Image 1 (cartoon, rainbow, N blue to C red):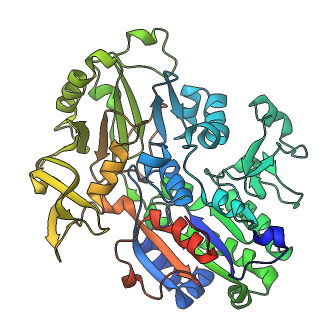
Image 2: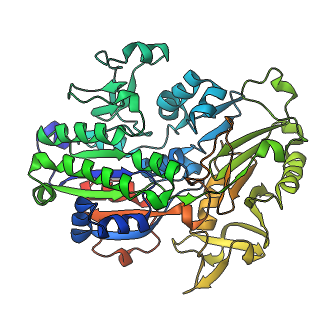
Length: 496
């Protein structure tokens, strides 16, 4: 019998998972040292701090959010990137790389894909989210605006929002399934909190989460809360990660506001476990790669192509990563091989990756490598691999009997997961540090910050565990986003 069905409360502490988008460990350290993040400092004092929790590849928010919420990689959850080509529907999917990119693909289509289709159609149906696991166990779930929200509770669009007409014009008229207490910008709210989100505009989203979260704490409305704080990402994109102490301070204020109804951090922590994490990091970008120019000899599929049947290749830039699709199934193998040649030795492209004869293949300026699961080499997470070719291509080395890469953490596992995703392109690209791919709207983040690549600078983020998880980060080396949902389920005694 579930705790809800029996009327009992769970024996475990309530748990808050706070995701601060693009939180870079070095910048968190600076913010704490400068006294700009006292709430986070309190959590660091009482918790376990991991400074190198590894993101997904691509290290972009939709992929990372899906992994955080499910505990699996893109090969299982099937969210491949920020921008991708849907082979079944023969069209691009754009989750909001930039407003110009959304406009190029159709603003309403992009919004509908992001708000509805990502959860209701694109996220693998057979892969349960943390909300679904906990809902099934009878626990009270809650979430503020987060890309992955799928749960067991039906929610109709908000009828009270001042933006109702805008939402209806964008076809936001359909119900969704989410956590029990569900707040998504001004589009969905499971109850009146008095909080407004201005349609989730950047710079105001953390404040909306803080307002909603404080209401949920004050009224004791959750056992598990996913508390999303995305504004640091927007700030870091614009000004660069080195300037993000200001936006980290804003996230810290949101955490402080969340805890205030309980009496402050000490009282809050007596009743709540807290996990604070980033979905990925960020790195400065100074130069651009325009894939449309690089692959101009090919007939490229445009977002609003008047003759899509004539296209040979679809390109999907996503910040510091990109995917390329060979469209004709009859010539896909040959086209993929030709694309690999065209994309090799291009300034700004660090890694070119593809599938070849059941294996993963990779090319960099330092050589070519092929690998597959099941060999004699073991990585830091216990995966086993067969590797042939130049290990220098990924900077692989053997350390303590395990194969690792300092430049590309969990390189083999992340690349294999990305290449094995049924929605991924035929060729995957990771940008050289300092470079970013121009999106379909012609936008980029130069000279600010970006992410998306396999490189450690994009991939290693923050994980703080307070009242949950091990007492020391060393008790479980090689932390990954995939570890978070299993840890939450273990905390509540829910089988995964």
